[in-house]
Length: 317
Length: 295
Image 1 (cartoon, chains in turn yellow, cyan):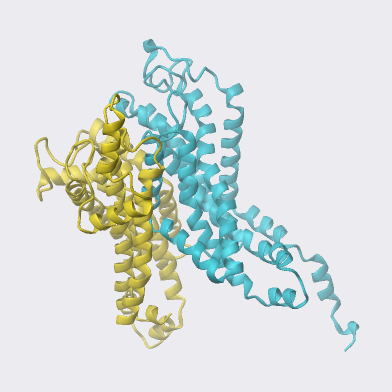
Image 2 (cartoon, rainbow over the protein chains, first blue to last red; image 1 turned 180 degrees about the vertical axis):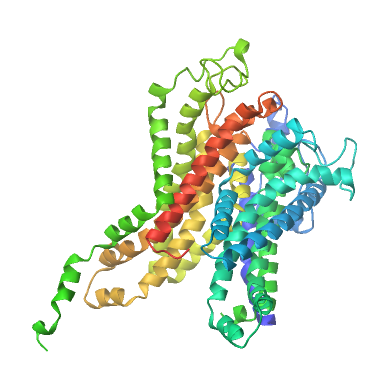
């Protein structure tokens, strides 16, 4: 067990280093002088040189990368050019808001995805299975930012039941567990949940159908076990894969929340990325992407380890 | 045992047996859903190609006086947008940019990714490690995040959006190509070809490519739907095509402010993205089962 975790971590470390290198390179593939948004247009050459030294742009790429990585490891991701605040504090606050949204969406998607998947897998090739399959194809094909707009049109513009944008009433500082905040998260979370719902339903359907075809299910039925008993065995066998898919989907939603956050003006990482891009705030862009990408790699690692706990066969593979 | 001992029926069966691609075509043509999806795709492409001639109005000509007309207005069957331009014409011409942005990245990534994957899988060793670990780094980013990060850093524009999306789709294709090539490389027929003196080039050309391209292609067609949604998403964020160029994602973005005035018109570009994406998904599913490729 420990050796498996060790191997998995050793494998993840170079990936994390590579991801950091890619994030570092983002600033350098950006066209134009990296100082252009800091310096006034009529800055003298001497001032430019001084700023180059201050920001470390006069050093070699390798030195710059090492220094940037060293600071990032200590939680210092630089200073946002637009707001003048530290990038890490901005990112951390936004990550919290995105996490609330992504976890709620994953939960909803998982619940309905499991339901559709199990029902479709159990009643294979019936109309129930076919309609569940159609639903999951729709789930993976729908442009979710458009679905968000449609939900806003129906529930906010037409029916006036739910708020269209924001995380809470104006003036609310952060997330709170109350009815008003729940109303605000409902539409974005529902919109976001459609993607994992389709993917989980597809995976579970195939998994359940495969498990039901295995000999041990035949044996269980032959020894007279009731359908409910067989069902618990199917659940036990499907759980590791289902949880793994759920974990990965949470990671994708965290990284891909920008479109939905834009539609609903949700104050998370997507919103931060959006403003970083359009204000050419490269340190903020770099820092946000680094945190999200490393979070995704770490989540993958956790998912693999948890899955190997639940299903010891994986370690031997 | 003489040749006459082989039953005649068997010989007939061999004569009548069809090639692999013929059997794929036969299975595919029986799949009603996949055929319907293919027809939709062909119609969309035809609409995109012919749009300059068949669109009823000038897609760029707007007039403030006729802003945001509802669906069914005289002369503007699908209404007008926030600048008073004909929606039907803009949706038709917009198909060009949207399809181009959705399909091109997958096409280029298919060529580049297959080359990387086949090379890594066939040569193996150190080259495999270097290529595939580099691919793994890019694979470690969630796809939307990578696309936004690259096009955000490079700046808005059609070329940068296409480049970013291509980089997003190379890693998954390269991984599939490498996995399939590694499988094929250890097959007996490759061993037999090598033993009979075939050069590496001949083996790759005849045995590897012949058996590998099919599964990679099926996988790549499945990515087109994702690419359509992502490409329009980049335009929706303002990172793709620039106004006044009609493109479905960008149209959806500029019409967002109109959802309280003309909700049906505002939702139309998304319907087009949805139809295209679902058609490519169903086509890919049909192709996969016709080619009997395990997903």
